[in-house]
Image (cartoon, rainbow, N blue to C red; front, side, top):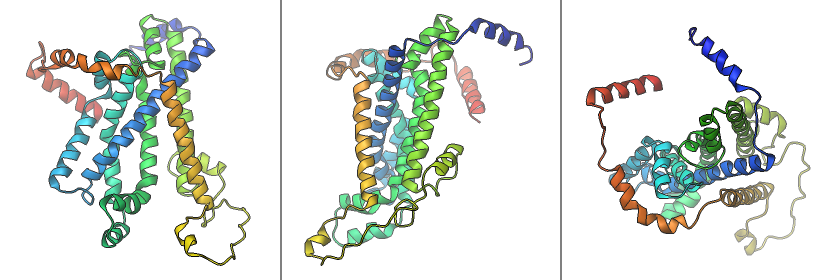
Length: 342
């Protein structure tokens, strides 16, 4: 490291001033990057739900289903997203779609495991009560499991979205559109000022995403319950504390309804402040997802044409071949990988 100080000084001298694309191009690239990251993360969350239900010991139909679901999670977790992106770039045209699929499939490995762990830690009372009352398996999951695991699932999805945003830089080096692709072009052209300028933009996006994640976690769990991360503590100071009844501290309590109750009232769920917050949050999340899909600039026609490319791509990828590298080299490389990870 001491001997490399001279190289660092020479590199710093070649950087020059940080530069950025034109504001319109920068906004488009930023929106495209956020779009495919959010879309891929939501895709992973949707795919992870059935895998987690089958993998959890208390909701799996049987050992075979549980083992198969856990194998799917391990397989998705073991194949890096950059490798998946390289494969999908061969099957689809350059753009956001390869990145969405790579992020979505790889993230299933982590999210399905976290989702399954949350399911296994629930209170079994509500689920068993629904079963005893004659409820179906879907009703057990919707009313007995989902309300208990929803905060944990949302927190895990937000955490995975942060990871995918940072990983989008690497995906740019294999042709996935966005800030990462433009940064790879800049560094390949030795335009270090432009490359580091784009890196600074990605860093700012990660900070903003962390603030948003902390705010969402604080809103779901209560500002006083989120204390772990520095950003969480900052948001906890900014958000008003909620009273046990679910309203913010200092709010004026609503006037109680004194009219006579009717049988229909028992079947009609009241619009409490907590329900209003939930409805607004779901509407905002839906709008964000729709916006993410729109700005991702997905080439939808590829979904109808990529099937014809599967045989050619499969022939290039199979059978696996280590080339000139023998087993001693491969075993040594695996050992170095484990050491670096530790």
